[in-house]
Image 1 (cartoon, one colour):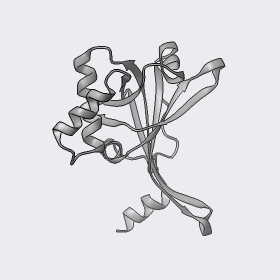
Image 2: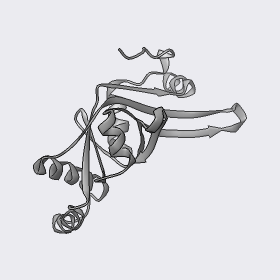
Image 3: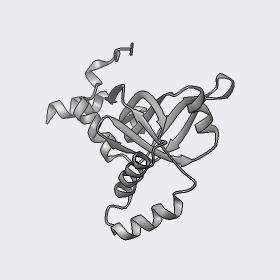
Length: 165
């Protein structure tokens, strides 16, 4: 169903991909948009097991696209070091393909926003986190993306450097 990576020597392991997803702070969610135009939107996220969680408003282009076609991809760039003298960049990135669903059940939605809040404000107090969630609860929508296929790739120069060390 998913294409094999052409330059498989540069392919990251599943563990490396999951590390990048856990450590990353943002990525680009790509959906089938209006009139068959791709729609890519940068988002913060949290990875938990084989799921990604995002927050958004209860209406807008993103939700319209998801309701029309819940299949999506999400890309996280962990490294993009430009090397001008080599006309390249030393990159590491991950792409996930999956299906998105809008969390409707209150408990699921609450669990997801708490995971997101802890990721982005890990030192905050539980009380303060609860206050922020309560203030933003009414307009909040939470999304869950399954990780049906995950792949990662890095620059060949990074592969070579790792082998040399």
